[in-house]
Length: 373
Image 1 (cartoon, rainbow, N blue to C red):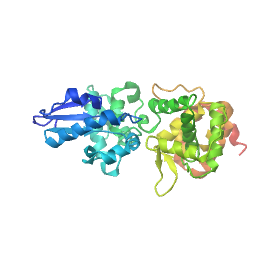
Image 2 (tube, helix red, strand yellow; image 1 turned 180 degrees about the vertical axis):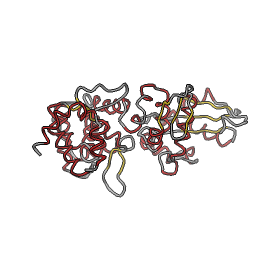
Image 3 (tube, helix red, strand yellow; image 1 turned 90 degrees about the vertical axis):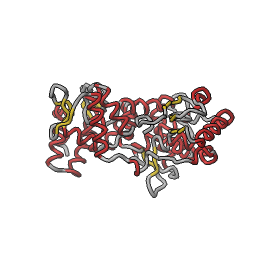
Image 4 (cartoon, rainbow, N blue to C red; image 1 turned 180 degrees about the horizontal axis):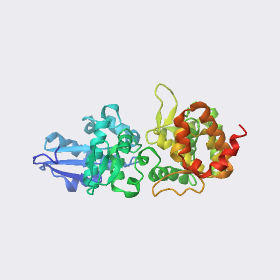
């Protein structure tokens, strides 16, 4: 509003709070953006250095000619909650972008997609056809558009749309990019696993995520039985046996809350906050050791199978994330597919199964297992 309207305001973005002294004058008419004011993951607030600057920011804002927009992630805000409870600067309006009030509807998503497609891909939307480029060639089908605007991707719709239209390898994946694990999400999960090699804290966090993912996307830190199972998961991943107590699990859940876990309404249990995140954790766990594959196959969902499971020889497209099933695990996979068949038998089930790469490329290896059922 302040950038595009005919106003006397200029707009600046500060990378750190410490830049305030050099960049902002009391006499300026400016809109100041403090993005991720105390860091992206861990709170880097320094009471001694930052409080005097926050006092000055408050004084400038009260004068009226300086507007300040501050963004902060929920996980970081919780780490410095006392500051937000106490400092007068944070008594102004707070907008929770994750709340239902600000959730984008399909029409708004379509508008965002159309603007990006027009600006970046130089394309226009033709009804019942899709987006066509400047040569009139179809580059995004209307069926894909419908899927895209009904998705709520893990990283937020505007950011994912930006990545989608600017990166060819993501764009060529079409709507799959929006409802399947991405390279960045998988790398994020893997990073926690790798940190666990050196730090016990991250070892427990990753094991908690794995337990949650393969436990029907649910963890109750008050349930003592999960302590033993998470200990076994740590041994399966890291090859070490550690002694855990219930509070270790509870602490890990709290640290993961917001970024990875959310509280299940009206329960004391938690879940991974997005299906794509759950799928990414499952894939990363399967990649640790082939033995883990046999633990995972009986737990995969039908939608996970359709989107992500591929035969061993499959070559993924650039940017695509898949789970290749080794042929020595086909018996377990056949058993799981039989369970899907019994529970969900419809014509579309058979049609969807026959269209998968794993069935088309290796059905001769799968079919013999069904004669024994």
